[in-house]
Length: 383
Image 1 (cartoon, one colour):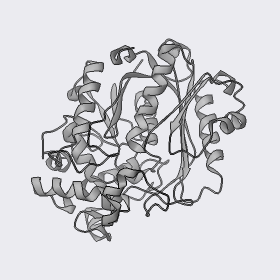
Image 2: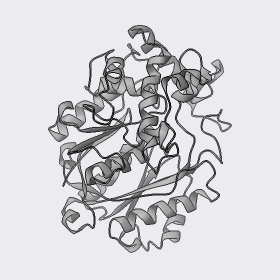
Image 3: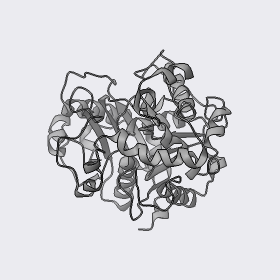
Image 4: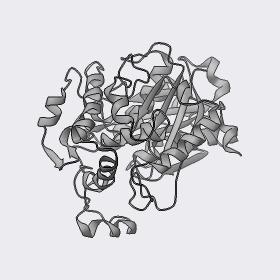
């Protein structure tokens, strides 16, 4: 099967999620089950219709237990994608391949965790990390903020950015969250002054308001063949492109070994694949949902995806292009800084809502929505 054969062959038929909180009060299995059942019902299906499952290698919920909770009698396919947010869209790639090949007819994708009330992702990991981390941890790089900040600092140096420049994105994300009732920061916008007054996490690169949330919650999707689109209870989100992009010397979403750390090389590779598969270009994208564990990664991805040139993201954002009503509204749900951090999966559900025309911050005439997570991404279109 060639990558191009996936174009327009599958749709996201259903979406579901729990509330996003800091203390869910229930197990990760229950969160996964609640989100999954909501997505199955949203697709007009029953648990008995599900015959495939995809999740993250990091997810704690066992597929067999979830089958039991939901009442799924048989599975013909399952898989998991490595790492965290950079693999969010790869879950959709796996599901699209499964339904296109005939391995499954309806694939459930889920991600659920108690990231705030359970183990906090922003804190040092007490578990033994992969061997590659031996290059970082002995130097005190034991939290995500420290690890990513080194690459961001190079970008700042090359293009003369300050932390205040990064704050302009954070303000937009929280402004979008403030008008999204599903967001944790609903009705709580911030100003640039608020951003600059927040405490340093890694000086002089990241402040508290540059960092994504630690959230409790679950998100689920159902992917089916495109031929089901006319029978669905809601408008389907056509998968016009979906791709994964890995390069030698990379490491999760960060790297220290590419020749130019002021550029996101994997995202450039990702963009090339998505545009080739879809036949679209940057000017055809109406909304962009961009994974942001930290605000600077939005700048790197905007440039690598071709929405602006190298070093131009600062002005692109400052000129209002990513605002509602701008040339390219970004993270209309508030993103991972403003809505919730569910490893980027909630950005995909927002993309589906934009295609359906049901988003809280709906972009008029949204025909094509891109979701990008550094090393994986997809483009959704109307059926």
